[in-house]
Image (cartoon, rainbow, N blue to C red; front, side, top):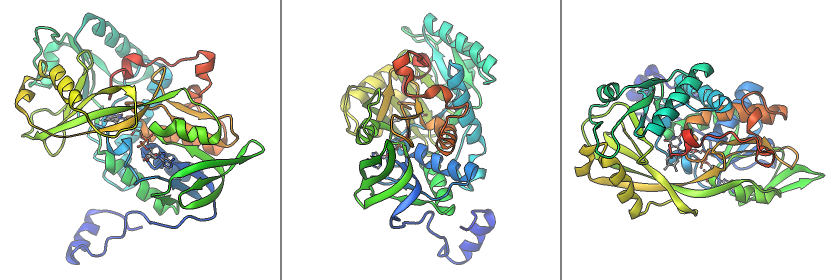
Length: 415
Ligand SMILES: Cc1cc2nc3c(=O)[nH]c(=O)nc-3n(C[C@H](O)[C@H](O)[C@H](O)COP(=O)(O)OP(=O)(O)OC[C@H]3O[C@@H](n4cnc5c(N)ncnc54)[C@H](O)[C@@H]3O)c2cc1C
């Protein structure tokens, strides 16, 4: 694979850019692979990448029922932060955030990580106490966050109205090295790197069944035929329940649609990410100038990847008091993704009741930020057959045994 560089760009400019290779190959399935990853979203692709990079396992196929990155990975609002409360969460999200810092160099693909700073507004006294507690926990975990004053909030984001009549801003939890990334580029960068290692990315290849013998997986039935394998990683977000069902076990996960919308592009007016959890909305400005606005989940289980009118109204009504300037903006697009919610709002990275079948799911409304760390931990689990320190607490049996990793404060709002 040719390296992307300024020299390559100059060279290609001389030949009308006709010499670029395809970013990833489009192979036909082989009869069998050492490892099959189901789901070519960010988490599945990152798992494959770190299997190759960290463990030298490259006889891998990544099976995707649609197009790679077409699930939640290409539908999210791209917030990256690691200011979670519990030690095991902070560890994996901080691992991911730190990998994002150098991801573009690592993948030789511009993932556009933008550490512009993330603030979570405290608009009730309860939130002040909650975020101060998180800031103290983060200090112990080595995650750099601070609780900042209303004036500092205003200085960092002048378009904010901090004196709203119902919910004045009382402070914020601020993570200066949080920010955003380019969601498609993260998927494309990992895909290109996997393809360069000789892995097969099979798009339009839906898994319809999982076969096993003597309690161990043996292969998958797909829309492109049967493919044998020794190990399977299920990494399908909102479809985890169905695919687990194919393998013969149940998961404590429910699927709901989560919605977002963007406005028409406007001049730069906001260079941080702001989340207002009390009123339930969050906003950042994209490089194109659109205001990227996140709403909530639908209040019922469903599999539609579309937006709905009442979400536009509810989300904007919630945000306008804090961001009065958006009251005159036209909204351009809205959409939805199917997220996989667990009861403690923490993920599952786990062995399963079926031998050599592993599961990575439950990232819910906030898994984009976790992609590199999740892939790192899942690859370790799949390569060694046992979880490493990053994944150790996230097994699926914690729901049976009451070992919850409660992140309802950090992840209760969609971001
Ligand atoms: C509107 C919205 C906003 C969000 N905002 C943020 C945010 O700001 N920050 C953040 O950190 N997170 C955010 N998230 C969450 C984040 O997008 C997800 O947690 C993350 O992208 C999940 O990645 P994934 O790889 O697990 O899943 P996906 O990207 O959904 O990938 C799973 C893939 O599996 C495929 N698949 C499913 N079934 C099968 C099958 N049977 N056979 C083959 N393939 C199959 C799907 O087609 C899909 O491509 C948001 C999500 C949404 C919907």
